[in-house]
Amino acid sequence: MGGIGAPELIIFLLVILLLFGSTKLPKLAKSLGEAQKEFKKGVAESEAEGKRPAIEEEKVTMTQSQLDALLAEREAEARRNSPPSV
Image (cartoon, rainbow, N blue to C red; front, side):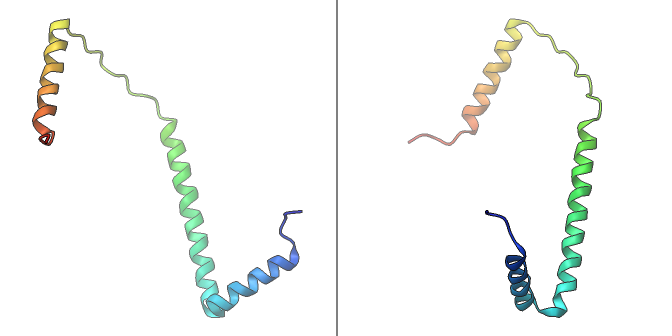
C-alpha cells in the first residue's frame, strides 16, 4: 500500500515521453546524470572540509576598562549607523 507499482511507473514514463519527446529524453537523462555527479562531488568536498584540523585561535586578554571602552565604541558606531527614529 502506498508504493509505486509497475502500472504507475509505466504511466509516468509515458507522460514523460509525451512531454519531452523522444529526441530530448537522452539530453534530459544526460543532464540529470551530470547534476547527480556534481551533487555527489559537492557533498564529498564538504565532508572533506569538515574533517580538516581546526586552526588554533589566538587568545586575547584585556582589562575590564578596555572591554568597556570597546563596547562603548561599538554602541556609538551602531547609533551612528542606525536610521533616525521618527
